[in-house]
Image (cartoon, rainbow, N blue to C red; front, side, top):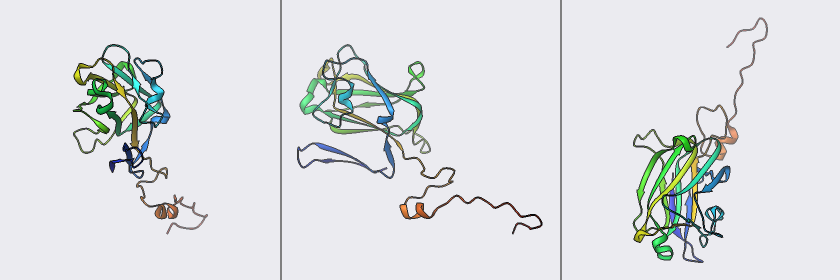
Length: 200
């Protein structure tokens, strides 16, 4: 998985770059909701690909962003865009990522301190075991537990949710990495023997 954050030439803002061969953005397959919002700064601001807009909570902490999928999905990475220079006390200082089948059984996957974040923040969802590279869940929840300077409400400018890219060839025991190999791969179906013949 290759992830890098680079400065955009036009606006001097960070641009998210995730290696397309490894991960796929799954946020468009989900239903998004938030615990509260100020008028004009709702949940749609988290997904509009505009770093100048933001979701602003309106109420007591924790502030919640809920991401619900119709079927169980493999989740590997959460990316947040935060800007301490612009948002100051509205900037999250501690977040928790939870996953589960629904609101009734969410479990904390990661908790993270964010010292004056500026740009894309990457939260890998893998466990301590190297074989645990993703989380299977119907629901993901991001909880803002505290803000910088003891701020009450929060600003989050963008959220992206990534999972491993699925194998393009069903029932293939391994995954080819180049388009050339994929184009030459086929599922071989054995021929039935003709009466009186033998398998060779």
